[in-house]
Length: 249
Image (cartoon, rainbow, N blue to C red; front, top):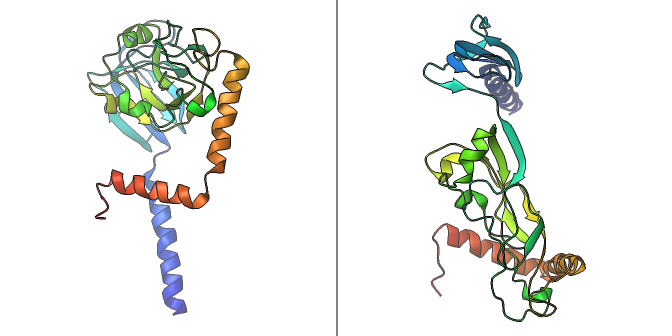
């Protein structure tokens, strides 16, 4: 019994060591067209990275013996900025029905609010889009991406642009033929924006910054009031629905 146990432990350590050995500490992208930060382009050169940091760049860069070599022939390598918060890749995200954004990230602006009925307070929750996922709606057809790439941006943490609880963000690249090809990682967080409604008092809650804070507070209070058992049942139902399983009763 003990012999089998130690044999199993030894096998696990060997497997871990094997995985670590397969992960190269150095990466070399060779024979690529390199656009540098300053100076002229390198028509055919090599980029050496070690431990996630660029170690060498140039036509004569020597490839380390332990490097994972990537053939970059016919490809272009260039540096790019990362936008920490934006709505890039979501066409129409600038339009913000129901209020204007005080702070909604790059690419977000103010737009006339759509006509709304009477909203009494945060219990109506018309500005909550917490379940919306940027990864599901990003689109390479967003006309703003071309201008962003021209300015040197290649990646962004992008979020949906509606409401106060705007939804779940995704880290995306500004390339790809389809939306899913743009997504690097998701979800990366839930954005809470400061928005106030238009139309005067009583027409579009919240109509002030304090009202916005009240909206956020009330939503968390309501969430905390839901019994734990009810949340478990709800989550179980959502998982079964996502898997295509329906109750027979």
